[in-house]
Image (cartoon, rainbow over all chains, first blue to last red; front, top):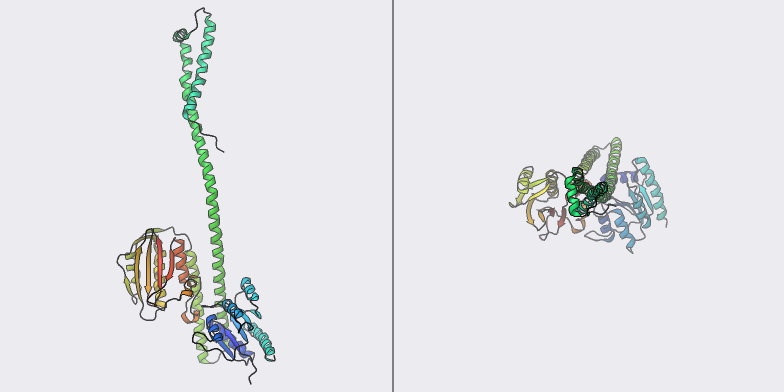
Length: 141
Length: 320
């Protein structure tokens, strides 16, 4: 049985998706990663709505961008925290935004971490490595 | 505080009585010097005045002083008027200053917001460029290289678009002060020439509106380009107008993909897009600038429900 947790990456920027994929590869992340390109798409995947089939198994970790069309990261996070089935998910905010109000809002919505996307890829790989050790711990739960 | 206003008759009476003091005093002196036993009555005083030229000259003090005091008095009143006007102006100036200050504060806040969102967008674009450049250095697979190069080119284009949009947004942020009467029939005839691939159905009874022609042309072009960008078939645009009591309404209807009700406010935010920026290469500035231009020109823009359920309907309202 595959014990690796499933990861959902919610990111609208194609370059950031490539960035994440490459950083995962560098860190030998073997977890299955599902990509959604905005908050609404992610919600539909998590709930099996609007013609999308619900993810099975459900992801345990979400990497969530803040600025996205249709439904932004904070809007999705609010919906997740209000949903019985989803509210215990570990959510890491992943964004270029260093706005304190965004951080505060995310913090109040109980995020596992808030990662400012660095310009330097190597730093991003390191951040992903830290995350990887975090969800490796979850896998032993 | 400005002193109370006095009527001109007040000054005439005062002048008359001051003037009268001189002949009265002169008459008393004259009678005293005359040392006469005659009864002192009005006819006697009159005959005395007629006999002595000096007294007659002194009598002139009555009209001279009446006129002089009247003139001084009216000048005084005029000065009071000026003082009152100045006082009003000052009070008014305070209000105007307060209003200007408020406007400035709003402008400043707005500018800060624009700078914040623009720098955020630029930062994210530059980060993309930097990431892609690094990946390109390491990438050996030809196909992936081409893909990365294409993405890089798109980011560079986006950067240029962002800077241009910011400049236009700032340039069009001033209150409209170049307004003229614009015959919309003529303006549309000119604008549509630049879009030969769009099928236009423009009513021929469009009104003449009072607006900045450059800004209004920008609004129309932006709406047309928006329709082209989000068209599914060959783009078609219908333009009609309605005349209200105090405004003109211009309605644009296209046959594109339309905008869902939940995004009809959001699309007017600066750099907000409904689709992913990568898929449409749309930076989300056009409609924000359109809204800005309309609001600064005391007009409005809104997206209406489309009963036929396809395409977007924009309604512009321009004050008469």
